[in-house]
Structure formats: C-alpha cells, structure tokens
Image (cartoon, rainbow, N blue to C red; front, top):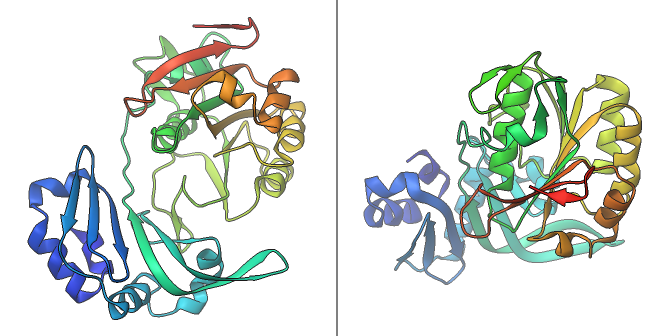
Length: 308
C-alpha cells in the first residue's frame, strides 16, 4: 500500500506484517504515538499493532512526509496537519509554541494521525436532486450537516464534481444543462487535497480552488476574481461567516456549505448559522445520518419552513 512508504522503516515493516492485503481498502486512519502501540482504524473495526513507537520513528516519519524539508511545510504544521501526495492528511500533535495567540511551531512531536483519503464516485447522486432544480437549471443555497466522520466532505467532493462537469445524472430526473463554474474555498485543504499545486481529488472540469485561506477572505476574493456560479466551503460557523456568505448570495452567487451538527436544533445554537437561517440565506438544509455515512436523515426546505 502506497501510504506505508511515508512511515519509518520499522513502522512500515510492522504495518505490512500485521495488516492483511484484503484490509488495505478498509483503512481509514493509522495513528502512531510516541512510546505507544500503533492503532489502525478500519471501516468497521480497529487493529492494534504491538510495535512500540520510538522517538526516532516519529522523526523519520516527519522527514518522509515533509520530503526532508520540514521548514517548507511549516505553515501547514502550524495548522496542525500536513497534506501528502494522494490527498491523505496527517494530523500532528506535540509541544506547541504560541506567539500573539498564533501558533508559530509544533515541536517535540508526540503523535501523528494519517487519515486515508477516499473518493467515492456517485455518492452524491441521491442528494443532488434536492439541491439542483432541472426545470430552472439552478442550484439551491444549501447547508449539508453532519457529525464528524459522517461523510460530509466525501459527499461534498462528489457533489462538486457533478455540478462542475455537467451531463445527465440518472438520479436528478433531468439534465444538468450546463456545467457550473465552481469556486472552492478550501480553508483546511480537505476538499481538494492540493499537493504542489495539483488537486489530489477529482473535483470536475470547471473548478477553481483557493486553499489555506480563511473563508472570510477567500470567498470575497473568489467572487471578485473568478466570477463563480457556485461557491463552496467546508465547515462554516465561524465568526464572520454570515457576513461573507450574505455578500456572496447578494452578489448572485449560489452557495453550498457544510457544518457540524446532528439536528436543526443543534445548528441554531451556533450564532452564525442561526443568523444565516433567520436572514433566509439558505434554501436547503440537509441533515446526514448518524449511523450510515453519507446517507440523508432529513431535508429542510426553508422557503416552505418544512422538511421532506
């Protein structure tokens, strides 16, 4: 498995020895912690590998994922992760140096969490018929809501690919008449998984991407420079999001966003998202299932103040 080459030689050997080939496609996370065993999360199971991780394993692994140039990845490290080839994301913890309320370094690395990127083509085929109106050829301003690890970002990637490429989708009951120009503001590099300027995830034909930029800056920049039909951002709800999303929608741009939550009630506890709802800026809220990744639990049509 290609991801194994990013680990120290001793960890790599332990992974190859203890993980069956038929389990490779089920791997979701590989966690290594200094002086602890290795833990591997599968789709519906966990593996414990009885190799005790050493400081030199952490250091060697950091050198490999940063291509022997930790300094060039310093900005990503300060955000708590590094995105590596293939779109995989490595979370980092350790001793944090803070200056003026800003992280300037993470050293004495304690743990690394390799989150294995997966693309699932067609996963948005069901949800798109609630977001796209084939008669009018428009996208509804939509918020996709789910708990962590509920499949929001995987779903969002496929949705972007669908609407930016156009064509017939067998589940839309119609034709996506024209591909939409989609601007993706990828604040944490989770949607596109950009690696040296090349998206590791296929987001379709007519997509423009800004990564590692706050949404409040990136959305305005995209609207002014790229004239998108649709703007996309992940995990909204921070300070200033209401203002910038209002700016986008009032500019005639449609929006598709995600947020953490498991119900309309939990969403409304976030002041920014509550404002979006009260200002009638959202037309659809789609709540994902807590039990099955990417599956719809409830859909709210806000123009009618009811759910489907």
